[in-house]
Length: 399
Image (cartoon, rainbow, N blue to C red; front, side):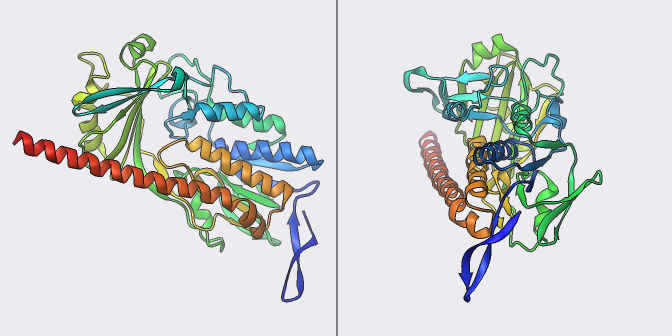
């Protein structure tokens, strides 16, 4: 790490410029999309300018495992524009990773359903498994999306360490860390790419950065094994979205994915009672075969999601990307990981790794995502108000 090039002056005294150089060490905590994208782009850009970096990715999960052991607790939706954008980056997702193209949306309400076709019936959404599939999967037909990206980063030269980071400290003015397995090291740059469902975020609150983790909300995700023919008959190639008069439910969707139907519920205080009310509603039951019932054993979880970005997502030699920084509210979280990861990598290679560098070159991307989320919240609020008003008027007429 080179600290010898002056970048600015304060009180007449030149301050050092923090830059990466040959031999600089970079730690990435989290090997999900944000961590893998960051490592991939950082190493690719470093190679372009002739810098040899050492990059360690700390990721305890094994994405080759089915169920919770290999899952990052996400609905697994990638926009088609994101897939095409990755192609321009040289990242070509194979058909064993992209599950199924979604060519339309079906909106379900108490008064009926309406199908919304995408332009020219283009497949606008790709569905993926974050691990290798749900708990209890018999045939592993599909490749893990997260594993695919992590392998890309490793192919670029990143060192993947299957261990959990347990402590963060300052060592000689640089970030240092220690893992559960006893691995320790001092780094010139640390990228936080953890999900909001890990305790690792709390390690940084006491580090003295002013960092505060993102605000979160509880969600519900489950996978029902139906088989391809059943999915084709009842769900087709459509993403099914529900606007129902259920208290606390803000958004719900059913997404066909391989042999499975993925159910996602978002709202306030998601619990078993709300999940049962949703799954037993007539609008939902019509999306399944007659007589179908929720099985006794299936893959499900109540993960938290990022609903408001972190406070102070960067410092000297440190930056927070993906869910540990800011995500895209209720949509395309993988796209948000890509954007923040690439912006952070570009800043580190071409500008520097000081807080001021990240403020000038990373923060604008961060703020753009935050603004998009604020607009999204307004749209959701207005939609719910219109929905409640309509239900109130309907109730009055029926009475």
